[in-house]
Image 1: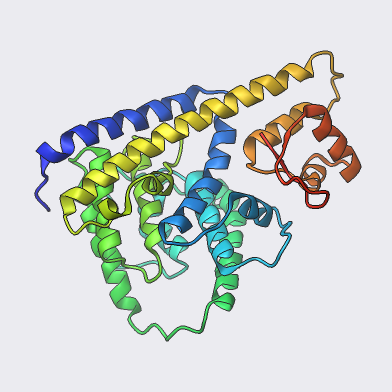
Image 2: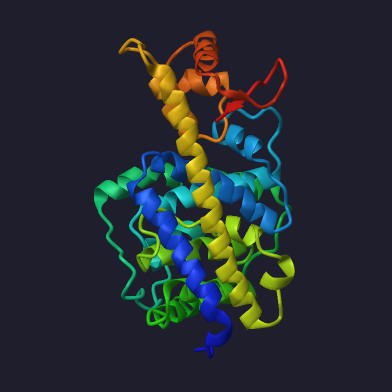
Length: 343
């Protein structure tokens, strides 16, 4: 167990803990929490690629997720979609289940490490048939993303050290089990740092950040949402989160959690205000109007097209355009073709 430099980490740790708690409480009681959570998966996936030095736009990712690409998807876009699918999978299951041997095997696409040590006491592994059935669709999406990635990437050398990888993952899980006495944000930061320093899974740095987010859920620090770790790291200087000094890296982690939670809170307020303004237009509308459903859809997706609206609401493309015009959503492309709107 590394020695904790409390004097250097106390202030940023307290700020991070408070910011996460405020955001989670707002999402627990807020009226547009579902939309915020759905949008957060897209934003954090784009930030995940950004942290690794790649660029994927939110608009392209939203269109790719809806199966309405306007151009051939790039390998980076496919990887971002895989992150979205993984976040949806983790968010839909019990907090901490991703840290279990079965959860890790599902995310990594490998076999369950039979010899792995038990999960931390704070991790809840409540598997049930109904949940597994609900997650089957997400598993299928992850499998499709992994297949496309394998076809798009150059042929890699055969991996002959699977047992070694499983041993590294088991050691990382044992390390997680030894951190339950520490504050949740600090413990998650140590897990993140351990994975970033020596990733147990090849080409899986993004997975460590996702597992750290789920650890925060397992420790009841973020019971209403899956923290956007990547979005917070994107707001932190590279030289701090990649410093050779472990204390500097942990301080950068705490600042990332604070900044990410503060940005999430601002985004929540923006969505809530936009939805409230749109709902004013529902006065004196007939009970069968599709506008309320369109408002809910706009709150849950970062980008809308006439095709997405038509397919989701079960109307024609022309009727979808009429509904969008009535609602007055903001047009983002400025083009006659491939038009898109957002809150």
